[in-house]
Length: 270
Length: 230
Image: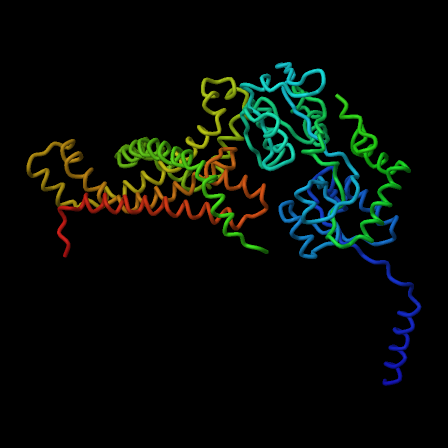
């Protein structure tokens, strides 16, 4: 018996020594409910643009991935509490967030567009693409609470009659029902969930893409705890490669009929 | 996790900007709710089954479902029907304010009618018989004996309902209204500091509840001034 145990231990030790060094595992935080960026398919698989980007990075720097689903409001606190190592969750790079965490280079644009009814044929922007404040008079403006869009609206249109929403879904419902006249949101989500569907048939974009860096930041990036400069450099190199070799382009086109990464943003098709 | 006391002080005046709307919602829906409650009470106390059953059904429905669900049905549900958006009611139902007032009023009416019914049932039968013996008409007995005594008996439970209504107005923040909780939630989303901001809101709610409680204690003392304390 003793002999057997000894043999077994020796075998285990031998096995461990013979095994190649295990690839490091990085835990990635995302909402898992934000289709088409990060979500679960009906089969339970993680999918979406953020997931593709995370997989692309992992492949290039040679690590395994573990997905951690986390609600949006706790995303940064959970990263700081070491619940996961990376945020790949469509998080825009902003000055406020940069005080708490580091960001990679952007892997997707951060942009807003205003939606309105086709019938009203609104003209809210001048030729140069700047908002005409008077044109917004008397229009009820739907905005998501504390979003980058809200910051932009507050700064550019201080007189606007704003209704604050907790998410894009109830806001678009109210737009459809006529409680609000216009709404600003992520044009990619708006296109997929609303404009391209029957519900949104009577609506269109009534603004150019709005992406002033001052409000919207340079785009969406991978977030990580401060002090991980080596990993950050590896991720930046991987993303740069993915932009150059067309991987990001390929990922975009899986979900949208247009590109959504910063070096190739042409706007959402009408 | 850092706790920032100064943030409470800074956010208090901002949250107070929503105080007007909170009190407005409370006052308007309490008033409408009370009027409706009296109507439902009269139906409920009637001897005619076709009046009693609708009142019972109403009370069962509005006490039996969450106020948040009622608000969502009125706010998100009704506009799904095209005819409602074409109807004369739409200018009212389009407004989140009126949707909130309607939901709060309908809900509180169910509770208040039951509170008042408790008061009516609590009135001593002997007093009504005495009224009969004195030759008072049915209307006189109701207005001079039953109603004042029922109100007096119902006051403590009614004050409870007003306090509960004050807290229910916070639900209006889910349909875009910027009453105190709506303002607080917006500040939280901007500052990532839920504890401090919601503590500030809590302080204001507690002060309001204290005012309501004290007010009702005064009213109760006044209403019972003829009752000798033993």
